[in-house]
Every structure is written in C-alpha cells, then in structure tokens.
Image (cartoon, rainbow, N blue to C red; front, side, top):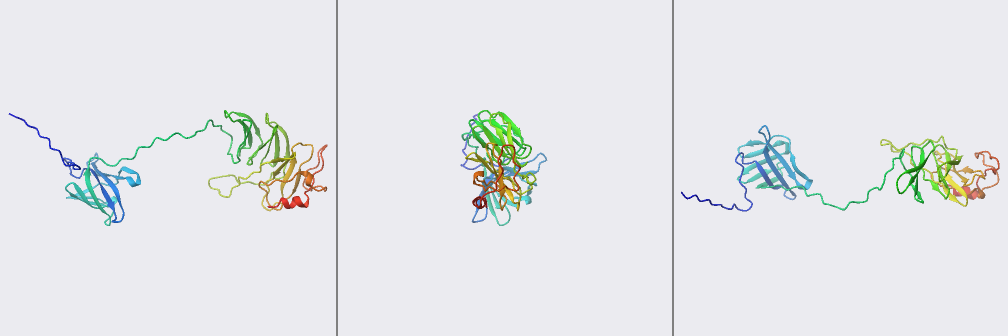
Length: 322
C-alpha cells in the first residue's frame, strides 16, 4: 500500500475556524462611524463554566485583551453582547454588524494574532539624587549653599547646616517656630527670621546663638499648608546684609502698622523698627544711619553701650511703602 501525504498551502490571510463554536478565536477589524473608524480586536473564548466571553483590544486607547462584562449570546449566526452594544453576524470567516451601538458599522476577519502593546523603550537613565537627608518639617525657602555647606530651615522650627557632599547634618539650631524665609550666610554668621518673632544670628561654624532681636510680630497668626486649605501663607523674609547692617521684614498682619525693621550685624548698636503702611513680606529697610534723631515709640529700650533706636526719615518712610 502506498501512503501519500500532500500538503496544500492555505491562501494568505485565511485561518481555519476552531473545531467548536466557529466564532471562538481571534478577530481583527474596524468599527465606528463612516467618518471616523478605529481598529478593534475581539478574542472569543470559553470560561471555566462554558460561557462565551469576549476580550476587547483597542490600540487607540491602549487597551489590550480587556475582559468585557457579561456573557456573549449565540442566536444562530448572531453574536450579541448587550453590555458593550455588540451585535454581529457570522458570515464564514467574517463577522459583520455593529459595534458599539446600531449606528456604528463593524467588520472583522479571522486572524492568528491581535495587536500587542509596544514594548517600553529603553531610555538613558536621568539624574538621580546623590543623597537624601530627612529634616523635621516642610521646606519652603530655597537652601543657601556656601563653601560646601547647605543652610536650610523648616516648618518644624529647626535651621540646619548640611554637608553638601555627603548629606550629613553638621549642626542644627532649634528656633522653636516655623522658619519660612531663607537664611543669610556671611563669612562667620548665619542670620534668619522665625515665626516666633525673632531675628537670629548664629555662629556659622557650630550653629550656636550669638544674639536674637524681637521683631515684635510673634502673635501674628499663620495658616500653614494643608490639602484642604487654599488661603495659606508660606511667605517668609530673608535678611539682607549691606554696609554692616542687617535688613529684614517682620511678618505684619493685614492692616498692622509695624512690619519692617533693620538691625546691625554687630550688636554694638540697637536695631531700628519703623512704621509701614501695609503688611510686609520680604521688603528691606535702610540702615539706621539714614534715620532721624527722635526715638521710635515701638523700639526696645537701649541696652548697655548701645545707641537709641531711631524712626526713619521721610525718604525712608516713602521707600518702605508697597
């Protein structure tokens, strides 16, 4: 007996229907309106209970093989899934009908595979942190970097010096209330303002306090940042050093009259405070040498060896307005 085996090549694009329900398998086509159509893939398969399910592929929405709710109904040659408004008719190796809805013509042909998501491209790694250091609160002011050290204050009321190379905290000073403004760093000192109403001077090498000056605004309230609060206040004054004088702004409340003051970098002379017509955020004041000779009623009493405080000249009054 002679047994002959012949292999016949199927036409390109033709795929045999499964032995079971001919609708089972993969189908690819398009659906939508006449003016706008998209590529759609359907995967019909049976679940563990024997129900016919469909898995939808829509590359335009980056959806691949998503299982649809409900069970497909087979009514003769009809293929219906009400949950996604799918209504098709099996015509040999084609499915014709509507999807989604009666006004969206759809046409599918049997395929061996459906579109798959594009692989994630390999891209060069971007910069990443060299180090991270945990502080004790939020940071709103920009850090100050000088000679390899970073000076930064937090809402937790602590000003810290951090090694810029390693991230190690070199020293910390607890001021006690939020620090929202940036620090002023000189060759040997660090100046900053705090919500407890003080302007501080610290030794730069070890963070020890040299002196503090009461700006007179410790009772001014502040609403800190919160996910459910929109009218919150994150502003803080950064001191400025010029001609041996530290200038900064107090945190005056709206309609308050006292907000701007200046104090010398060396505590040999007493700081000066004067009237501003509006709340001060980050404005600066001129040095005390430009002030008139009469004492300022809100200035603190002179200390031993210090000169009395002075109010501003008319020119100073005008320059402090906003």
